[in-house]
Structures are given as structure tokens and as C-alpha cells.
Length: 270
Length: 160
Image 1 (cartoon, each protein chain N blue to C red):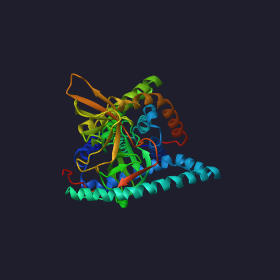
Image 2 (image 1 turned 60 degrees about the vertical axis):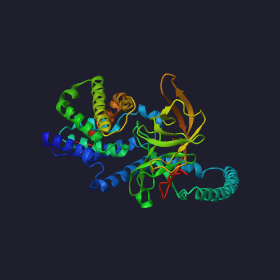
Image 3 (image 1 turned 135 degrees about the vertical axis):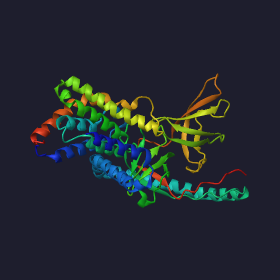
Image 4 (image 1 turned 90 degrees about the horizontal axis):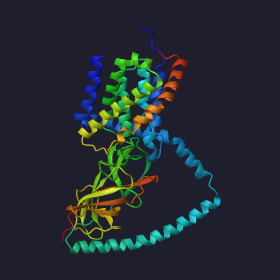
């Protein structure tokens, strides 16, 4: 039995500490990600089928009402897009005046959430797009209302993404109103982010929106992240803590967007 | 040496355990769920220690690592250690009454998760509080049904 134990633990430690990011295991790692996604898909199949049946048996009236609502919404959104095009053009001119790099127009790709991974202490999603669909490591994951996370493992046909609320995640943010910068860390609670080490005199108020600052080059600048819920300042300490709630619904919804063709923005200093 | 029979039952029970782990469960309910693959593993080690041992433990550990997104090998080290302890003491644990067995199972699941957590912290992951030990209590509660149903399966298909 001795040699078996040595072999098993030796293999594990080798994989853990030496081969973890080694390219030798690139293939098996991809396969593992895809296999895990397959297991999640099979386990989630009954619920997906139920939801599908629910969709199938919806009444004609409900569908018509929904269709009308969506058409209206589409009209409004189209109008807003036209305005946006004008604003983008205007913005480009201002940027040219300020000698600053042009923001690259970003395509997005829609991916479906297969599951939330099983570990209770971790916030990780499995999505149904992989390296075949040009997903790559570190790619930002966007929800309808804001930033959701980033891709941490890529398989061929599926990948895993860490949510911004995971205890190991942090994202550079900026207060939209005042431009104050900080680092929003995950807390392990799906509805809480925390910005530590904010100087007590900083201009942050309850209700402020935090957006990505673009520092670090991983996340594009300007995506909404969270809304400030509480500013905890202890009169005795030099720093206060800011508690914020993520804007994207992290535990609901079935689709996410992946930002494609990310190029880190140049500094915006005039 | 008795010819081994019914390997497929063992493999199937592990596959089912992993599938159950992957079931879509609301986040709030997750702390009340036991560590299914480990319970199944410990049952087979107690029942057939000559067939299911540390190598199986290592493979099952790695499978759960891949499934729940932990660094591959972390749980595997824990499950190997826990199974090692069970292999040394299975004759005694078999004689225990249900309560004592549940306590042992809780302890073993705790060993697995402690080893996993220590290795992950060593690799720079963060754990908040003692949430990683949540499956211990649930595993103690669920040991009875897991043991009874696997025993029924084993007897029905005469797995040896």
C-alpha cells in the first residue's frame, strides 16, 4: 500500500505545485473543463427541459403581449442607439482634440450560463462558449446591467468564469461622479463588494456608481460594476471601507455577454 | 482470491454522486448538502477495502476538483489521506454503531476539506471563515441513507 499512497500524493502535489499552469497539461485541462461542463449540462437537463416545456405551453395571449412589449422596447432601444452613434462620434472628436487614443469599438458575444459550480465557497460560472468561439483567458464577462466577472478556465467548447463577488476576485474601479479610484474586492457574498483602504476624506457617497477604471488593462474602462450601499468610516482610522452592491444580477438570468477584441486603452490624461 | 465482480456498480455509483454534485441547487441551500462523492468513496472503502483504495480515492478526488473548479489535486490529497486512515482502521469502523460511524465519516470529510483548504491557501486562494467545513455536518446526517442504499445495491448485484 505504501507505494500507492506515495504515488497518489506525489502525483497530486506535482500537478498542484509544478504542473498547474504548465503547457504539458494544456490538453487535459481543456478536456477537464469541457467534461465538467458536460456533467453540469446533464445534471441541469431536467430543469432546462421543464423550463422549455413551460415556454412551449405558454398561451397565445401571453406571447402576443410579450411580442408587443419587446417591439416597443426595441423601438426605444433603436432610438437610443441612434443617439449613441452621435455621441460616439462626438466623443471621438473630443478625444482627437485631447490627443488621446480612440476607444476601440467592442463586439460582444452572447453565451449561455450552464451552471454555477458546486463549491459553496466559490462563485464560478460555467458557460457554453470555449476556445472554438474565440473565448480566451481573462476575458471580461458582462451582464445586462454591468460587469459580472472574468474567464478563468477555457475549454474547447465551454469555459469557467469567476464572478466579481468571489473572495479571490478584485477589479479596479472608479467612482463615476468624482473619478476617485479604488479596488473592489469580492467578499464571498453574492450581493456585496468591498472597497478597502479608501482615504477617510475621499469623496464617495451612498448611491454612487462604481465603474471599471481600466487600470491593469484587463477590464475595459467605463463598464458599470456596483452601486455604493454604505460608507463605513471609523473616526479613529485613516481609511474608510466602502460596501457596494453589484449591478449585474449575478444569481439570475441565463445569458451573459463576453467582450471580444479587447485592447487595453491608452492613458486618458490630456 | 475472489474474482472481482460488479465493477460497473462501483463506477456507476461514483458517476451518480458526481452528477448529484452538479445538480442546480440554489446557493442558499448548498451549505446543507453533504459531500456525496466522498461518502460513496468511504462506503466502498469500508465494504471492499481490497478493491477500492487510495488510487480510487485520488481519482475521485481529482474528478471532484475538476467539477467544482478547485485547483486539481487539492481534494485528491485530502481524499487519499482520509482513505488511508480508513484502510488502516476499516475493521474497527465496520463494528461501530451508526452514531459512531457517522462521527467517523464527519471526521473524514473534515480531513478532506481541511487538506483541500490548506493546500488552496498555500496556492494563494482565499477562504472566508469556516464555510469550507459546511458539508461535514450534512455528511454525518446523510451517512445512513447513503450507506443503506449502497449496501442494498451491493447485495443485489453481488459486488465483491
